[in-house]
Amino acid sequence: MRVTVSRKAHFNAAHRLHNKAWSDEKNKAVYGLCNNPNYHGHNYEIIASVTGNIDEETGYVIDIKTLKNIIKLEVEDAFDHKNLNLDVPEFKNVIPTAENIVVVIHNKIKNKLKEGLDLEVTLYETPRNFVSYAGE
Image (cartoon, rainbow, N blue to C red; front, top):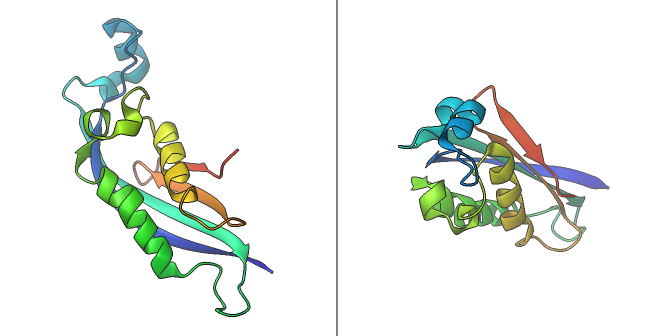
């Protein structure tokens, strides 16, 4: 029997959407206000959902404390109150769009999960704008 266990978390971070290969004019045309040279911030919310079989011994798919600790280490400690472009190595050569951020978060969490567990991460950039990624 497969069950999904979810945990919500949040972090605050700044970023700038800017493609170094493009002119300033093209960046402004494509990214608008999100291309502000002085960056801008969001109060990001994430939901990490782990799906797997219920362990007969523990009754858990995953101990929620384990998931909480993974999210704290891999997401909150790594991204909270950071400039994603400047402070987070994963975005050195990757534009920190919501789409790219959710993929990075997914991969960081997935690498810490036991084999056989599936993961979907939903990232809210604003209460109305969000993306989800469940791996390829």
